[in-house]
Length: 297
Image 1 (cartoon, helix red, strand yellow):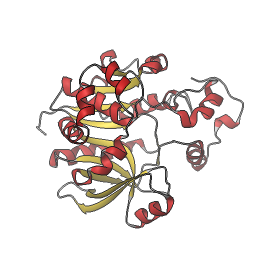
Image 2: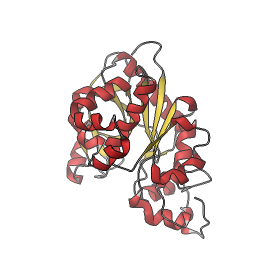
Image 3: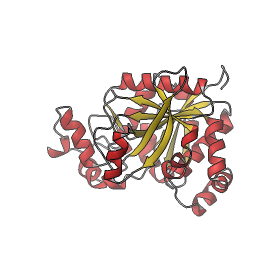
Image 4: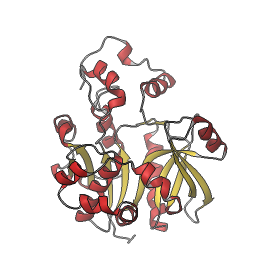
């Protein structure tokens, strides 16, 4: 990565949020994807994510990918993101096509860029520590430009709903970052417990790498999909089968990965109602949906 390469952010906001539809219905009055819902306070998870990363990357170099059917929800929450930085996919086809579409859009703008990828719907208690780790990941990519760097979180329990990264030897000259021995997406609970005993970390799905390297790996693993998504998007999304970036790429390319270990974030993917309530109870907060509700979408 050249010294003048620009650093971009890519925020993934294309999920449908079906698992949390009962909860978002109770909060907002109708089911909406959780990234657009104000689960706590007066900001949605998407708005919170954008504010969290703003000190790292200016809005002019922040892309957000959304689904066409969610534009009515997304636009009022993206007023501080340049309109041209909102990438619209015709529909949700899981994380693989969404990432390919976004990275291709970024390649057209800035092919020499590096990028940090952020889910839009996660909780982070210590945002200062989070930004410090992401800045460190950027330094790892500068030193090891052929690697994609994952943010690995110390597990709190053997949770079968997460991906797990098994660290190997420490990378030279970059602090708390390691080669990756293996990547396991949503293993059975018994296997998750064994992975943790081996030093495994939760995959936060926060990633940093060169745009060109992301796409090089994707073109090796999913050449037909990358080719189709380079062309007519509506036709490509109509024909393409959903596929998952963690299962179909990360789990297959461990030698090309690195992991930065984070023990201090207070991170959760807030993928289930139990996960959200576990976080809030740990913070001493009574989940507000247990009290009389007001519409907050």
